Image (tube, rainbow, N blue to C red; front, top):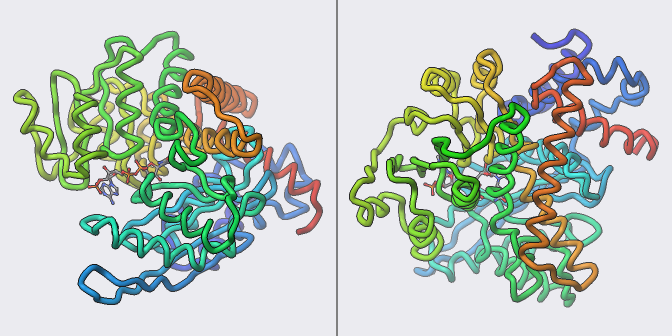
Amino acid sequence: MLDEKIEPFYDEVVRRNPGEVEYHQAVREVVDSLGPVLAKHPRFAERKIIERICEPERQIIFRVPWIDDDGEVHINRGYRVEVNSALGPYKGGLRFHPSVNLGIVKFLGFEQVFKNALTGMPIGGGKGGSDFDPKGRSDDEVMRFCQSFMTELYRHIGEYTDVPAGDVGVGGREIGYLFGQYKRITNRYESGALTGKGLEWGGALVRTEATGYGTALFAREMLAARETDLEGRTCVVSGSGNVAIYAIEKLQQLGAEVVACSDSNGVVHDPDGVDVALLKRIKEVERARLDRYVEHRPAATHRRGGSIWEVPCHIALPCATQNELTGHDAKTLVDNGCIAVAEGANMPTTPEGIRVFHDAGVAFGPGKAANAGGVATSALEMQQNASRDRWTFEHTEGRLDEIMTGIHGLCFETAEEFGSPGNYVVGANIAAFERVAHAMVAFGLI
Ligand code: NDP
């Protein structure tokens, strides 16, 4: 049940954005927490801050034509949704996946505003992408697509305007092609216009690892708040992409045992502990499917279909995609003794799943807090670009650790202050909203 003061805002969002179910879900999850903030700051309601945050500042949709290796013409659709720039230039990744549509991009951009606010860095929120599927495409096809995409996008982005990065389907290769085309069209070597760049051309150490590492660090902090730790804990991490691989690596460094990971075709269970070097080789070098993993590990099994959440664990990190962990999955995890969940992906747990975790007293770290390490390190990349400096791995990782510990502390304390101790969803939503709302009030009606 929504607070009666909040319900009209939510109803209006549903009416004005028909059919965008993921966007409705993301908005509802945030506004659901905001009743006590409106009571504390009546000015936020007077200035219609919630209504303004729910209406993106700008939404760009464009045609992306390109030619495949056989000479056939394809038409995809490109998006960039610039949601809020109260705290800094719009910042958020690009997703290339066939499921991308306006509602998905808006939900991701909306989440990004709050996530970026939690980092304490000077960045606003936005998101973009395309329904282009890079899977099975040659490097040249991906290059032609990226060049066509940037031929429109370049006029909307820039170091002080909007700074895209990677997300699902957009890694170092795609950022390279995008940056190359941006540089060519603008005739400017503007490193700060994109993050996630290669280390030889303006990228930052630790950016590749940052989201996954940060999620594991957030799990460490949630356990520390309950006076326990990751040592010897059994963990399950869904996905096997950028976030999942580095979440597994950091969990192992912190003493945990990771026994399962997945992709959209199935689940790998490795009771001896996931071999992260092998996983990197298969996914990052060979760009192959996950089932190849079991060819090298005799004790491991690969299962098509079924849910990764059936594998018993103490700690679960959903790191694949939205709504991948349902209420049913959450019950299974709780029954099997799960004590903490940190979201590496954006909105991977359904509202019913979150309710199950809260009711069972499971420590639940929502993505906008637990996976903020990626964008925070992107902001550190922008900082290095602006000062033409280059930090060591150790220094940057130290900054990431401080930022994640800080986000955890902020969410924890805010939840206590607003009467929901231990509820990181409430803590994250309120702390982030207050930061953005104060800036919006200061700027007047814009
Ligand atoms: P990748 O493309 O590197 O990996 C995604 C992984 O999730 C793959 O294993 C993929 O399997 C699986 N997956 C993707 N879509 C689906 C789907 N519809 N159904 C089932 N499995 C799916 O992406 P990232 O690791 O970068 O991103 C994962 C999540 O983390 C996303 O929610 C993203 O928004 C979020 N995130 C990423 C950040 C980053 O820095 N990269 C920052 C913050 C959040 P398959 O290969 O079979 O498709």
